[in-house]
Image 1: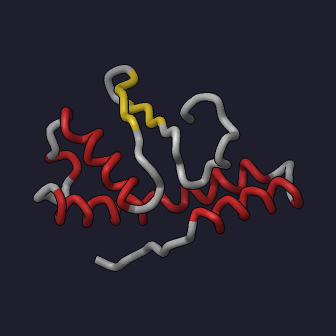
Image 2 (image 1 turned 60 degrees about the horizontal axis):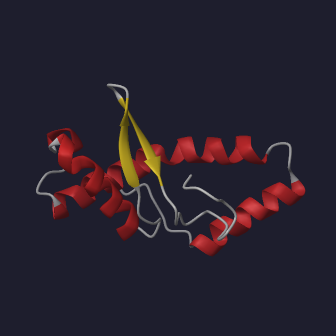
Length: 113
């Protein structure tokens, strides 16, 4: 499997947010969303590899539903993003919340986002 990821420090990511907000405020949210969507496949592949080393399978669908949220939170925390809480939304979606996410500006939100 080819690695399709790289590491950017949380300070660099926060600076990217600030620069986009300063120099391209009308496009900042769209640019960041598009970058996030484009990153999805690489993050998924990294999660699968991490699962292989930490959960005994590289296939998330093989995890028991009760263990999936904890594994996902552990992966993102180990990757430097921060811990997550994971809660079901309806029958086919999950809500992911974090009070300490790497790209968040410290002290800028009153509730997890």
